[in-house]
Image (cartoon, rainbow, N blue to C red; front, side, top):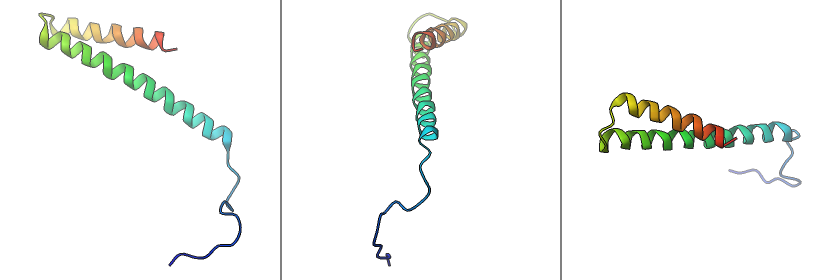
Length: 74
């Protein structure tokens, strides 16, 4: 059964807000660059499957889109 507590709920250690902000910043950067990579991959796959572009051209398109998107996202 749950214990009945009288007093403040947060009785643990002090929060390290600077570490929380760094972690949140890393999460946002990972989400941003991960989205760029996935979108570039989908466009390169569409170029490979639905056009006459070969595998090498699609791979180069993926690299160009990934690098260009990363530069624009800064």
